[in-house]
Amino acid sequence: MRHLNVLISGASVAGPALAYWLHRYGCDVTVVERTPSVRRGGQAVDFKGATHRTVLERMGILDEVRRRQTGGRDQTIVDADGRKLAVIPGEFTGGEIEIRRGDLAELLYERTADHVTYRFADSITSLRETPDGVRVTFEKAAPQTYDIVVGADGIHSNVRRLAFGPERDFVRFGGHYYAIADLGVDGDAVMYNEPGRMAALGGPKAPAFFVFKSDELTYDRYDTGQQKKILLDAYRDGGWRIPELLDRLPEAEEVYLDSISRVEMDRFATGRLVLLGDSAYGNTLGGFGTGLAIVGAYVLAGELMRADGDHRVAFARYEEKLRGYARVAKKGNAGPFLAPPTRLRMRLRNWTFKSSLLLRILLKMTDNFATDIRLELY
Ligand SMILES: Cc1cc2nc3c(=O)[nH]c(=O)nc-3n(C[C@H](O)[C@H](O)[C@H](O)COP(=O)(O)OP(=O)(O)OC[C@H]3O[C@@H](n4cnc5c(N)ncnc54)[C@H](O)[C@@H]3O)c2cc1C
Image (cartoon, rainbow, N blue to C red; front, side):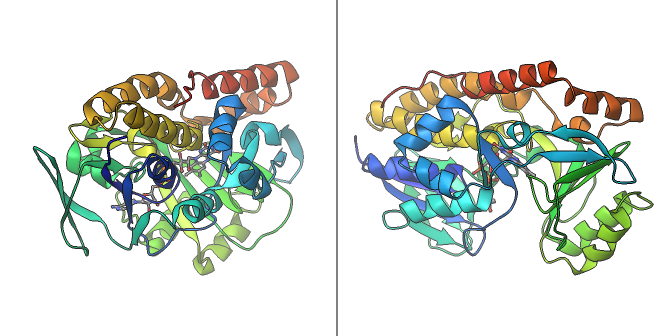
């Protein structure tokens, strides 16, 4: 393939996965990441079905992903007195292989760090397309010109904002917020609901995991103190073990709060700029984001190789393939499912997990979404 000098923004899942393939196809790759290092741990993400498995296998990391997997755990839905109401099977919440997002990011980083330039604690400040490249300025590094620039920087993508316009034009708020925290509470995986709010402990997503219904809030996403205050307000007067959790919250080191939102874009590329993963087709929870990121990286790099580096041809084919596959990200909103708005809806949701037939249908549907693309051998 014609040699390309590529800049990727974001070193989580999509960015390093693309860097892996592009290096294999002979490109020079630089990844710029806002945080000072690859962030470890975080929420658990999952892979499902033959398509995800095949891509991980072709990357040579399937065994290592399996070695680092967390292992899907069943989660018991309880009432305010801790009595069992229903059980969510690990297979449903954790897919086929479940791994912490940060552990996956670390593995992808390890596999690429020798061949790819990683620039941490920096961010793109401007992008200007010229006839033969993209002129990029950074917060810290000196300006440079690249053949193409890829935004793999998540739902709140910086590249999307610079290349396509403000976040409000592309990100739809789903009426709920989630928070993950490490509150130092061990024990079985349990989940508790009150209308419009959910609290879970020891479960598949995080040591403590909260989802609550809310109007859209204005706050600083990097201010942990503000996020703790929002969580305290949202769970005030809660039953079950919520008072104990709220007591622990002020001392918690790791707290992360964000909205449940969906990215809606008609196109993923403009000129020499292209979006990949959550920045293009994210849906916070329940949208197969990690599988989409891995498969999207495989297809984008493969199409660039097939088009001998012609970004116009490659981006058009990537968009065509991913638009169909990523339609799952446009469908669901996990908010009302995890935090049903009424007691009746809570009972109906719990009932889903008591019916083995309904559960089988749900699992089959998710498997169909995860495999709905014809993988080419590039
Ligand atoms: C609570 C929770 C549970 C989830 N569960 C699942 C699940 O079970 N299964 C599943 O498939 N998916 C799940 N997801 C979604 C999954 O985490 C994402 O879809 C996946 O991580 C997408 O990867 P990404 O690389 O596109 O984006 P992200 O993982 O969001 O990474 C974006 C990267 O860009 C960096 N960045 C941001 N701004 C800049 C900037 N200005 N400059 C440079 N870098 C920047 C960020 O620091 C980050 O490293 C879950 C998400 C959440 C929040």
